[in-house]
Each structure stands twice: as C-alpha cells, then as structure tokens.
Image (cartoon, rainbow, N blue to C red; front, top):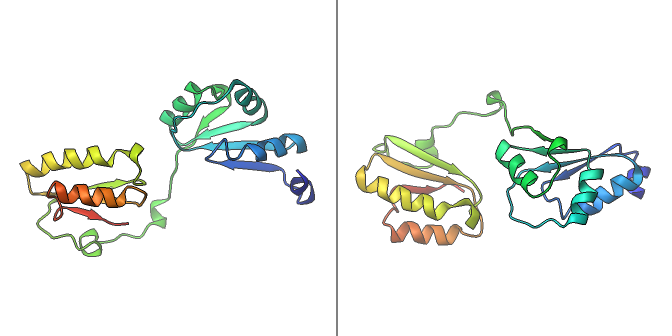
Length: 174
C-alpha cells in the first residue's frame, strides 16, 4: 500500500496466480485503486468462500484469455459479471517467418508437421499426444511432431518418445 501511494500507482494488475497475488489485491483495496486480475490457466484449486467474497468485491475486472478459462474460473466462484475475455494475440507483422525444416533439421520426407506449444507438465497431456501420434505414425510416415516448450516432464517425454520408437519423427524444439 505504501508503494502504491509513494509511486502514485492508479492500477494494480495481478498476473496469473490469484492466490499468490492476493496481497496485492489487499494493498490495492486499502489504497483505493483499481485492481484487475489476469486469468490464464485452468488450475484445479479450491477457493474458499471468504476468498471469493473478497476478490469478487475488490477486484474490478477479471480478464480471461479464452471462454474456456472464463467458464473454469466462474465455475470456481469468480463473478462472471466482472469477467471479460481478451484473447492472447500477436500481430503477424511482428513474427519473422522461418523455414522450420531447416531450423529444426526436419527431414524433407515429412509432408505434414504437427505442432504443440505448451509447457511440458502433466496437465497439458503430452503423453496422450504422443500415444495418438504413435498410432498416426503407424499408419503413415508423412507426419512429424514438433513439441515446443519445456518443463518438468521433458525428460520423461523424451523417454516415452524412445519407447514408442518415435525418435526419428518427434522433435523437441525447446
């Protein structure tokens, strides 16, 4: 609260973790400034009634990055009337084109590239993706899978790729 006053802050933005950022919501409430909370994940957490009363009263707007995220958080008790969907976006003009075959050393015989961009954590379902891709790979050698991201399951996913004999058609891009 003291920093909000001394720096003349007029807006507090809570980024992703509503529990971790609760102290900032309290400071914003005590300082009487606008507070918004960005909801990007669908974590399965239990929100207490007292917590919900406070955040629903003192966070002015919740911003969800998709309708699914909005529905998830409202099912947990976040007030739907204060929740808006604003999709994550980038301008295509800000993204340089790359030759993915060259950049990732993907052999040209792969006619189709399937990509997954996600943190390598259990809730993202990479194991299921690899199992499904394994079935596709048995039917056709035209496809490769590019996994973009990192996380605690990376080594386990590399091992699963080897066990499924997908070493030559799955690429870990980091």
